Length: 212
Image 1 (cartoon, helix red, strand yellow):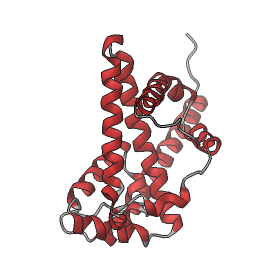
Image 2: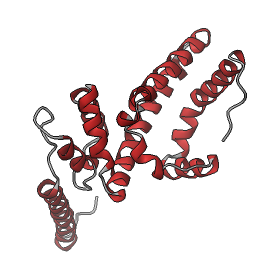
Image 3: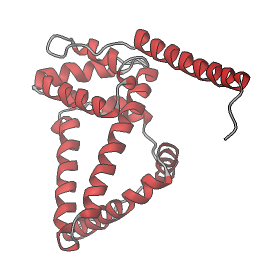
Image 4: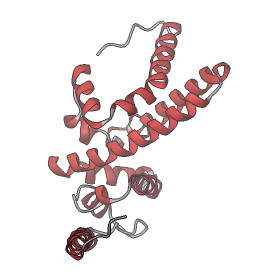
């Protein structure tokens, strides 16, 4: 085996050192510029939404940590009064802050959908309708809760309506830009099963087809 010359060895060491130095600089930048999450038991709704919309805050958490923070926020402000205060604070966010929060939250939703899709794909065929019915029921419950259960003062989704595409083709563009082909292939069986089941439920209820 040929021996590595001192010059080659030095070149490799310099390259490795440069990579390590760059990595250390990136780590230091994130460590010293990342805003720590507020203590939810003491934070005001305004402090929470400021953190959610800060590009150096919520969006820098790992995706599982983002989900954990959202669940804890929901629990902390779950009373009608707390939900109304949080809703007003969300409404006072700038459009840029709302976009930062929406982008970071999309990653949470993507992770949750993919995990649910994996579970669905492992479910025996005979149990899949029950699985889908449960998934639809859970989604509708979450949708109702975030929508304030009909109370417009507690509808936290209202502040983000301007960010949502109005047409199905625009939604498709968003999904294609934020997901990979592998993600879509993995989620497709679940999405198709849910769409089919909702169509069946609407037919049973005497409603027309879903329109986009």
